Image (cartoon, rainbow, N blue to C red; front, top):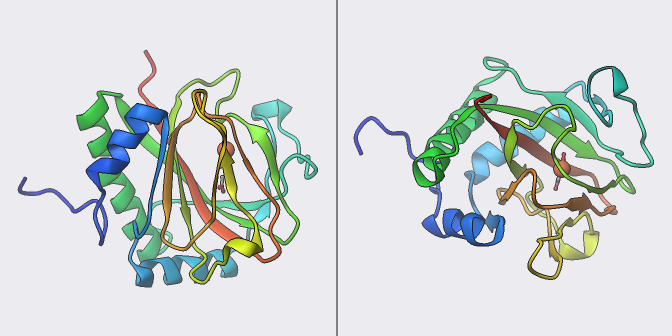
Length: 203
Ligand SMILES: O=C(O)CCC(=O)C(=O)O
Ligand SMILES: [Fe+2]
């Protein structure tokens, strides 16, 4: 297809899309280039991240016993690396729409830093008053992560036993925001990521 950006330096695999359709979630290693992952990790470390809230709007509150990460929302133009990442995710949005006709029309994303011991209890990525978040995407920014360091994303698919995914650098995880409960287990080391949500058009 001419005029189309590659999904990333390493490319989106058809298997990743197939897994999402079949099981409601999937993962792919080496989704971002090593170089882009390192640059984004450095920006995440240097950024002014703030404790994340739980809930939405007026009901939002910091409940660090439920959710212990610090976050920084991304804006277009904030850095060349963030723009490269957003471009990769734009290609992913188009691929998801082409494959599944989801009508995804935007993407929102933030850096996240879980300090050692921080966790995020089991939840769904949907708010009671906002059902537009459709596909969740997490990319990890930890180049030398060891499984023993913990910090797994534990997904709880409806039709299968739960599964732990280590937050390895450049790894992408996709899941259906409304269908797949998940949690972040505490780690012994700083755990960096970019978390984001493809939103569908309101009906
Ligand atoms: O970092 C992860 O693995 C998942 C984060 C998450 O569930 C969220 O931010 O909603
Ligand atoms: Fe989540």
